[in-house]
Length: 79
Image (cartoon, rainbow, N blue to C red; front, side, top):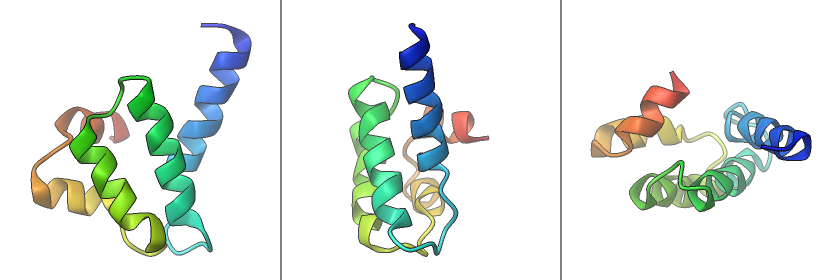
């Protein structure tokens, strides 16, 4: 991975972890989730949860992912 790719990955990681409740945070998390999905680091079911939550800034996608029992690898990565 190049330095630019490393920087992009770090930026996307920060965005996927945008605090709940901030204006436009759901959309930022979804955009970052799409980045990880395109890289093969997130499955489609997990991405769908981020899509659903994209207009709900205060909604925690990780809670929904847990409830749906999907995205086990993603949840492990998120710690």
